Length: 142
Image (spheres, rainbow, N blue to C red):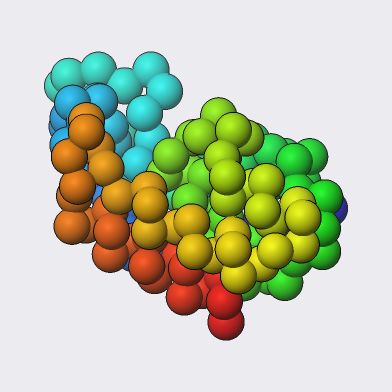
């Protein structure tokens, strides 16, 4: 069983940013803290400590998904990159992805090549998502 590292958490924080007041993200999903979306509504506020705890709580199902769905050995950097990808896109996105299929065939390079393909929100390319996917790809390959 693997867990996201402290470097992986810092990586996610770098991309998510932290907002202590709820806001709608680019996909019009209510969000707060470090990308927390479950049960968030307009006008909510939290403390920094609550935001930090929500991130740790939100990463537990990500870790479970990765540990349950990936059947090949991974380095810590590969796990952290996949944790960032899955945290951002959701467990279902990873579960049905070509990235996961290639990874489970031990085609690490093929899996890495899939990261940049996940750069759309509501059917449009988003430069910030592409930048994140390229950073995840780089972390995965390091």
